[in-house]
Every structure is written in C-alpha cells, then in structure tokens.
Amino acid sequence: MLRKLALISGTLLMMCMMSLSAHADLKLCNNTQSRVGVAIGYKDKEGWATEGWWMVAPQKCMNLLKGKLAARYYYVFATDYDKGGSWGGKSFMCTREKVFTIRGIEDCEARGYNKTGFFEVDTGEEEDWTISLSGDKTTQGP
Image 1 (tube, rainbow, N blue to C red):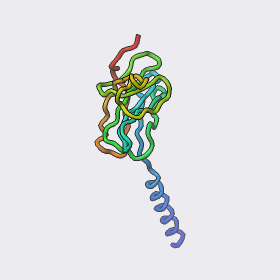
Image 2: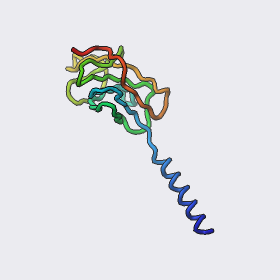
Image 3: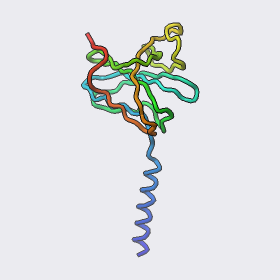
Image 4: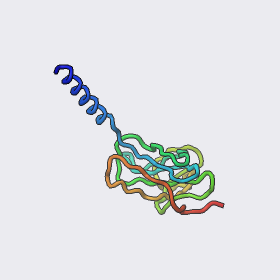
C-alpha cells in the first residue's frame, strides 16, 4: 500500500513539474518548399523594435521569441531564399541586409536602414502563438 501511494505521489509530482516547465513562445512554421528568411517587429516597454534574420528550413518550425508574449500584435516580413519573392504588408518598419536588432521604426532611410512592409499578426493577447507561413507571396520572385 505504501509503495503504491509513493508511486502515485511521484507520478503526480512529475506531472506538476512538466506543466510548470511549459513555456510560451512566438513560433513561425515554414509550410513552404523553400528556405525563408524572417524578420519580426514588435512594441515592448522600450518602444518599437525590429529583429532579423532567422533562416527557417522548408517544412520546419522555429522559435522567434522565447517566453510569454508581451504584446498583442507582432509584425512579420519573410523572404523566399530559393524561389524569390516575399511575404509583407502595409506596416512599415526598419530592416537591413545583415542580422539586426533595430530600435524605432521612424526615419529608416535617414538612419541607414531599409523601409520594409510587414504584415500584422494579431495574437489575441495569447501568451504563446504560432505563425504559419504559406500561400501566396505579396511580391513574386524573378
């Protein structure tokens, strides 16, 4: 009886620890047949920021931000490395060709950055969100 109780208690403790270790992230799943480069934009307690580039392999997912999401809206720009073209939108933010973290979204060109159109992702104030990248691009490759 004591052994059975210890086994049940151990199992319950492991289940509690597993639920506590669960974490929330912003993840992007590349549901295309191409490698894509991804940049994100968001507003945090310090203001607007853009970050890039993550390379996401075809049919794979990658965490872009780790931890509980701090904002409701995130912005994404992705480029198809293999076939050309990109996924973007009407929310303009700053990017550059190489890996970057840029604070602020104003005067991109005057500060030596590219002005790039991102599409908006509404997470509905969830703590964790997965963006699925597929479908038609907003610009086509050669």
